[in-house]
Image (cartoon, rainbow, N blue to C red; front, top):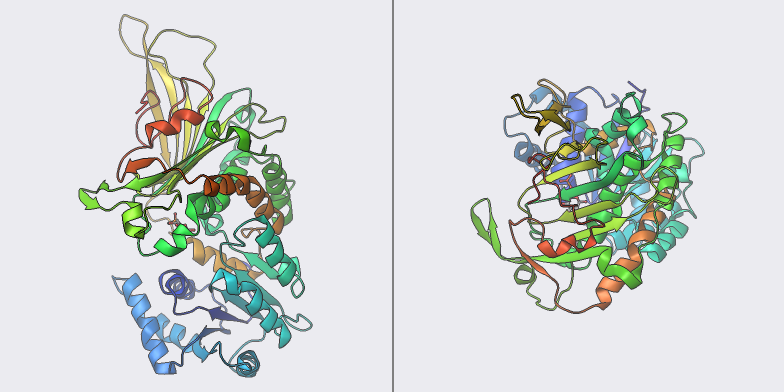
Length: 492
Ligand code: BG6
């Protein structure tokens, strides 16, 4: 357990959805686990005036909603005592001076400060400017850290602009750019499974691997986020961040050490080695679609355009890309990455198909698959060919299936892990600016080309499997989308 300095977490956007569903419950759980330092305060900052009592009642509501089975009342008392509220009206030119005055009360607020900006992305730069203008980013005596929620920019130029703006006031070590997938234990496990075992690494390359699929599908639709989503789309929302980070962890070289710098250095290298997607041959490298009305969990649901109320939108709710990594390990191996809302299953996994075995016995023989399940099930599965007992020589696929999670294991939400890292001063599970830039550099040309092409977008019924037309990106006839449960031979 790392030592955490006394500190204050200043939470901008504290009454928003992220704070209600993830941050407050996450901080409460850390408190219950004894992971918050005794001297640790939370100052929630919002636009409107709210009394301390009303804010405490609001927090209680957040915890009641999250922990339906109840929670420890002693911990609750301790947690509530850490919590304070401060109104920071956008119309008040002296708002940040006033906030600084409040924070200067050392008896209540430890002076190491972490600012969590859960605000509109267009406000990130301005909030940092204002924090700096009143001296709150100054690290002369105490540490000062700023968490920037996703998305960091909306394309490469805007990400660079945001970086230029905040780096006027903050050193890289003070900036914590979130990709919450990096807080997931299952993602952190990828590096361990690859490098803490002897058996996987020797075959983890172009000599043995036919192709890799990284998939993140959801059964949920865009819900009430239609406006946000229509300005964003699946490529920006999921591929640019979570899916490319999963790819980086799957493909990076072994870091010199398990230090933040060494891990990031290898991730940056591999992200920068991804071949740019050829926009002049986009149709063989990228596929997009939108969900139409359909059925999910036996319930009829509307299509994306209906929910949006705008039939002219070409924004994708399904995106698949084919990528190649131009380095010696991965030369020529296709990586198919995809994400979707409203597919038939909610599943995140890495599926690796190995090359044909040297010995080919007959028609029914399948290639080996190794599948790393990220969510909902954290597992590792290996499918191998084995003789069907009997007089004839025939094979079938059998499966070694191991759960990574066992009964009684701690279940930690990604945000809990990331909040703890923030207070510890460990930004290894946060993004470096070079990763953000490499990710935008890769997806920007596709986003631009797709935005320009106003032809109606391919539709798939909500609750269905991948659109048949998406297979256009496969390199070889015998490649197919791999699903979570079926054994290797299932092509549907
Ligand atoms: C967010 C996206 O970053 O990740 C959402 O904006 C998506 O659209 C979510 O639903 C998925 O996160 P998780 O942790 O539920 O897989």
